Length: 455
Image (cartoon, rainbow, N blue to C red; front, side):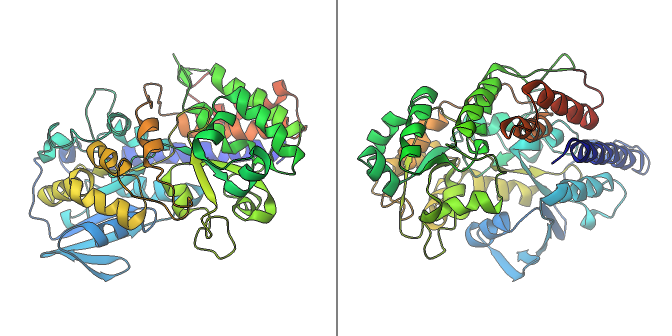
């Protein structure tokens, strides 16, 4: 991507952000009578339609398979008792889901109650945008207490807690990450595929980078791309992206740049984007990629494990903790201000995020890692295994990693800054720009997206 295209993209994103602000403002102004009415009215529970906004079929499938009393009618409709459930699904691509959600939230005070959003889902990358808005209802207003959700991992609640300390969303997932490594490559190069022994070769970044050289000699790249490790570094920062209105680049992100430049120059990893065709080639043995970093959902749902010939299909991956603990993603359930299905929303949230029996079933049925410490610790000590991981039980690794997660440095600017930093640094990694030139591209793109900030 040349500089002109890069900056044009930033302008488009800036316009989208401004439009979002206009739409949200319009929603407030458009409420008949008191513009704050939907934010102050009492939560009721007599609605006939439950409207749920999400971006794919993951949450609909969780509800269909695990929520007691749900009956599916078709791909976008179901019933719970006498209530009709309407699924409003818009894919994430090109910010489409957030744009659709923002427009619907802006109309929340002007539409009939049966047309209002009752539940909407969010991801960690942009959680603060909604959690710090009045559109996400505090869970205590639904009657959910701290005791109800005491078994959840604290970091999942941190993500959904606003700047005033109010909890506004719950997740059924815990998404601590691991390093998934190619067992055949480990045996060939390291002489073992035992997870504890492999961990010694990647226990910190110095060891990881040294092992990359060993793998290169045998024809393997240690990761598919430099972006595979980005979240591990970015989850271990010690400062926020924005401090006092100024953009700040944490030292750990600069270390990612330094380490990644060296790996890329040595031909020990690539520079392409995550989710690209080139990135996905490493799911198959011919591409000779050693490792990917991610949580349970990545290895189980995104690495072609159901495709014959893939490494996962034949149980060829192993799991180790890797250099640092990290997390990636997760989905949070938020009740929308103005819902007229308060009791049902409360029950869905509690059944799917705090019912230990249901959460254990999710692990067994879907290979997920769930947001319940006692359930996960019990299964970590059980004979549970993952076929994709060659019969290994990865839960002890996830359980150990999740305890080290700290999210005190989250900010509303994380998604935009993280995306633009990776985009800009690609020019440096590929030799199209110096480090300072890449930094200029980053600042220009972020300032176009967030004009209220300064360099």
